Each structure stands twice: as C-alpha cells, then as structure tokens.
Length: 37
Figure 1 (cartoon, rainbow, N blue to C red):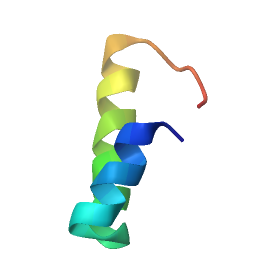
Figure 2: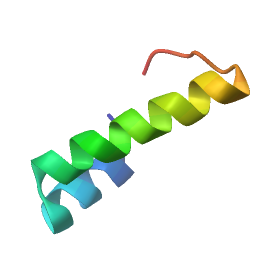
Figure 3: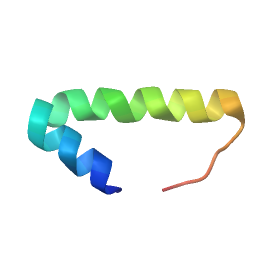
Figure 4: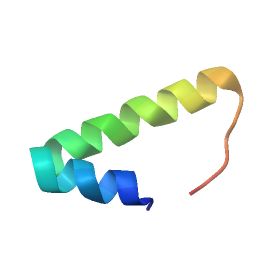
C-alpha cells in the first residue's frame, strides 16, 4: 500500500478506496503492467 492509498482512505472512506484500487488495477491491466503491490 502506498501513501496515496492511505490518504484516499482517510478522505473518502474504505469503500470508495476499494473502488479506486479496482479501477487502478483495470488500468494497470490495460497498460500491461501487472505488478502486484
């Protein structure tokens, strides 16, 4: 988990942060960078 994720969770809550993480994963997949964090 990076510091940005902590910031997002503090500001908008866990549920939205999970959606953001999912969106990032989809973007990463589309770009072909499948690095597990």
